[in-house]
Image 1 (cartoon, rainbow, N blue to C red):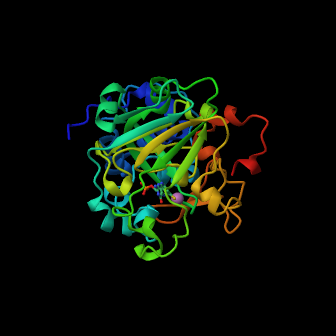
Image 2 (image 1 turned 90 degrees about the vertical axis):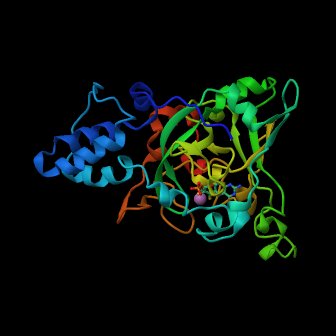
Amino acid sequence: MKELKYQAVTPKEYQKVTPEIFFKQRRRFLKLGAGSLVAALSVESLLADIVNKTDKLHYRPMSDKEMLKINRNVIFPTPEELATSYNNFYEFGYSKSDPKNKAGSLKTSPWSISIEGEVQKPFVIDVEELITKMTLVERIYRFRCVEAWSMVIPWIGFELREFINFAKPTKEAKYIRFTTLYDPKQFPMQGGFLGLGMGSSFLDFPYKEGLRIDEARNPLSMLAVGMYKKRLLPQNGAPIRLVVPWKYGYKMIKSINKIEFLKKQPVSTWEAENSREYGFYGNVDPEVSHPRWSQSSERVIGQRGRVPTLYLNGYAKEVEHLYAGLDRKKLY
Ligand SMILES: Nc1nc2c(c(=O)[nH]1)N[C@H]1C(S)=C(S)[C@@H](COP(=O)(O)O)O[C@H]1N2
Ligand SMILES: [Mo]
């Protein structure tokens, strides 16, 4: 596979896609003085290729208490080792270690994607060819699973709106649906419980997810083909997966091989399984509890303790307008 050529995050862009809190926090961190020099330096080196040191930002300094809470979930990207070994990919099993242990055999090249439904002309394209037609960018996003844990992931991919323009949907297209490859030979759980081909597992495979077309066109929405400056590994949804940072992780469907434009709101896989617990919207909201647990705080993978969950995962400024007038309880 060819090396990924992508545009690294510019300070301006970073500011656009990353909560202000990040910048406030970073400044505060750097101001702590000699005692924190080592920590500050390591933060600087972590970010050296991401954020230009001359960026001018207006901000309200945070209290030390706030800082201690926030720096854990925003400043530090999750160690790559954790992001590639603690995964949800039910096609390989229910445990967090199954994807890494079992996904190695997934054949991700060649990989074609079929574009169907409300488009001027349906077509099939290989993911490698698609990549050459899109503008690859790096985006560092917070990532929040519905199970109340979180990470910070440096993705590489392209904006979904660029793909939508390329796919040329008709005016009738109000929703977009993504489907994971169906191949029980490669995804053991698709073959039924324990891969024995007896009945079906608890999920109705292939995994499907959907977005409203305006959500999909939001500049934060992307199709990722890499993370940590490299191609996606199979356990993270190679060769191509959805990334929508203000929604719970279950929306971020992996290993996509079909994209359809639809007139009507589709039913997602988890929604079909239990719509009370996993709605179509899946918006991160600390005030709307999961029926079995609170969503007001989260466990940051690789850190101790919990931090407060942010409304729309910290991206309210960018996406809140999409939900004006809608009941937050119904956006779960
Ligand atoms: N096809 C498919 N996509 C999927 C899943 C899955 O089981 N199958 N799990 C989802 C859930 S619940 C989460 S939290 C994220 C996990 O992504 P990660 O393993 O890269 O962190 O993938 C999402 N995409
Ligand atoms: Mo999840």
